[in-house]
Amino acid sequence: MTNAAPLSPAQKTWENHLILNDFYGELSSTPRRTPMRELISTVLSHRTTHADEELAYSRMLETFGDWEGVLAAPTPALAHAIRTTRWPDTQAPRIQDILRRIKAERGEFTLDFLADWPTEQGLQWLTDMPGIGLKTASLVLLFNFQKPVLPVDTHVHRIAQRVGMIGPKVSADRAHKLLLEQLPQDARVLLNFHKHNYWHGQRVCLYTKPDCARCPLKAFCDYYTEHYGPATPEALAATPKHWDTAWGELPH
Image (cartoon, rainbow, N blue to C red; front, side, top):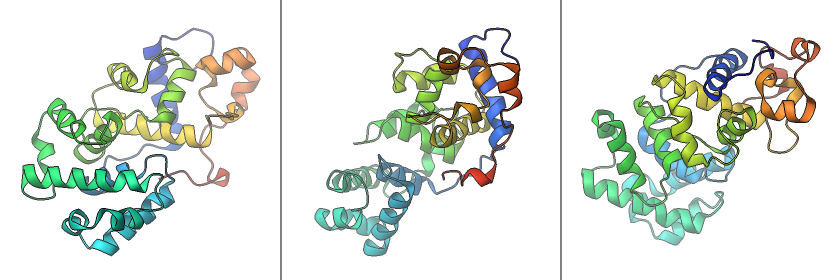
């Protein structure tokens, strides 16, 4: 990859995937959590650190035992149990509303049926629930059921705009579709694209003071060109090829 020829947005998206796959290492598509945990943990994670999200989830289940106990709990008590989240008084009734709907429609607390549903039907069913947006629904369907969807969080969205994979005014919801159209409909590719750009936004392409010197995308990044000019051979040669654990642990 050189900075000699301009790339189209779709070409930038594919180069991003190939380069970050090598930079961070390719991930398997083995689910990290059960579907129910993925759903509820993602609700808890909104504008909350991973450590505080995990603490809230643990306290919730330790206090109320299981999903039936969480649903039956007094809402203020549930809010207290998840108090390490950003908005516990909002999230507590939302979680109970989600559990109530799942139990009413499926007869038990399970999302396993989504494995057999068409992708669009699963997205529609999940996003019809209170507080479940496209990003959360896509995370559950991709991570747990290997559906060909692409979650776009703030980090993925920021990098896609800075690099030039999407336009500067494209919303996060619109970016789900645009980026998905530029990538193979392969769950493992989509999972790696999401996770690698999430990590990159957390550790390199920061909201303020992005670490452009360390970034392996500089050869075709609009932000880099705008601020530093076209990447020189010297700058490219000095760019690390792989993530070094000495720089810190990667997020979950």
